[in-house]
Length: 164
Image (cartoon, rainbow, N blue to C red):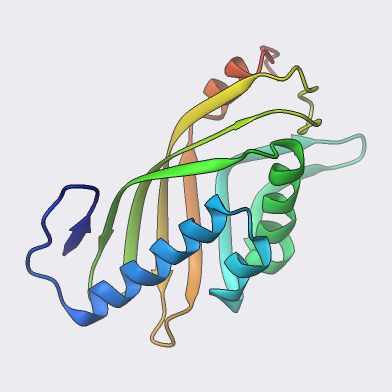
């Protein structure tokens, strides 16, 4: 296992684990720069995508955060950036192994300027811990992204306290 974070010493690293960690680190750098095209460039064409807490109710359907990076991830990221133009992340740890598995602990934050799902903009800021599990294939492209966080915590910070 390789674990990196600010001020943490790397021990027992291998080039495969380091390569996977480097790809994912670049992904989060591009996310911080709000470069959705660059984020998707680091993913395989059919990369799996699951943001477990995402569930947005519309008039005729429910949108869930499951699918592929191209069909769900890219539009979701673009929508987040449109609603939270200062969207950013702070990566605390990146842990990887030689099989291409990478776990990231990060805080995601932003100030809402546009509607997001049922949450109307009130100019409020949120910051919430996230856990991401990614897989980097032998071609050094991300082929799977799964994310977890407390969606209710974000809603409360944004002033949306309705319970479905």
